[in-house]
Length: 144
Image 1: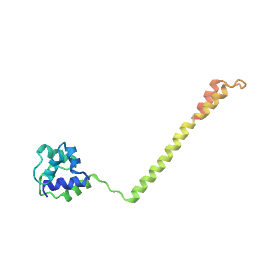
Image 2 (image 1 turned 180 degrees about the vertical axis):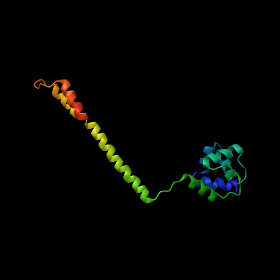
Image 3 (image 1 turned 120 degrees about the vertical axis):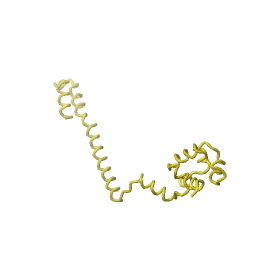
């Protein structure tokens, strides 16, 4: 497969129009059209940028003997981790259980200061013989 065919295939695989590729490459749409129709060849700097945009090597773009489908399948396999449905469901169940525990912990943490405020409020009442130090001590004991 030649360079122009590879550009077309990679561009379409990413769902880009010629205009979108041209924008990303900072060239005109006509330049992309010429590359794809083999009327011109991109210069070396543009080939390097194409390789970066398409996430392929320059060797892949420049060598005609490398098949696109084989190359793209190899690169996808290297970056992709496949999991079974059971593994995915187990992961989701674990995350749900973890989220419930986290929510309970946060609720407990937030509510744990309520007795301290209650005892402090009691210490402010004039008709009860309950001082602030005692209120703080009881509040801290209830928190711990």
